[in-house]
Image (tube, rainbow, N blue to C red; front, side, top):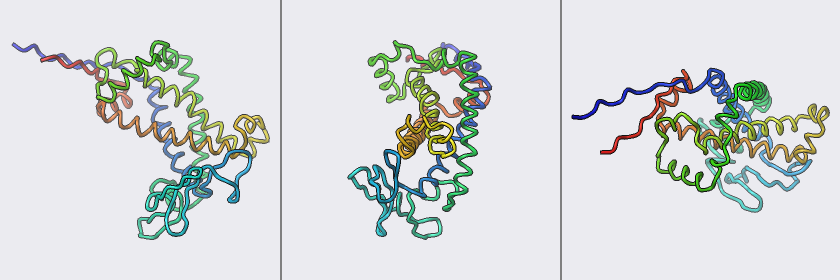
Length: 274
């Protein structure tokens, strides 16, 4: 006679402060990424050092030669017609801009509006991050849940988790209630490295902040270097968002979203052997 299936176990997984910060931060990052791409469209070239203008050598350029779009990375040039540099908008008009309208805020070229969007949500991101960090340290969420342990950083342990994720073998039972090593490393890197780096390099590009805190220019090697680091960090944040959404879908979107909206999480049970 078959044994009755175990009753699904619901546990409170995420604090209210964590859930609120997650959704506010997600909105702020997405708006800042899209408005940032519009700002980049105004001068789609990146440099290292203090200065950068059209006549200076750029390490990254996205543009059009009038015939097609391209991305130039150092001396390497890749054609990107239809995607970047030169593309067709929703009304069938050819546009010569780095990023297409569907990826930017606003969707039509407007540098002033993009800056207003970007700066408003920069405040939302910065204040939200500060409040979250203070609360996470105060309630020991950072120390207990986010800080990787030394044994979790062992190459053999990390490689095993990478293989399990590649095979879609997700933790079950009590293990599912704890962040695994890859989650800790990614969350720790985003919260304590990438987000502060984006904020600080963004401040470094402000002439007013330069006057008050000139040490930021020295820290990042100049305003143009800060702009390049800002762009790289933003791209890494975008990649994190994509991977994060993919993993949520693969792990069970209903259960994962319910946990981040209500706090309640259904603990996945190990499959019984036949």
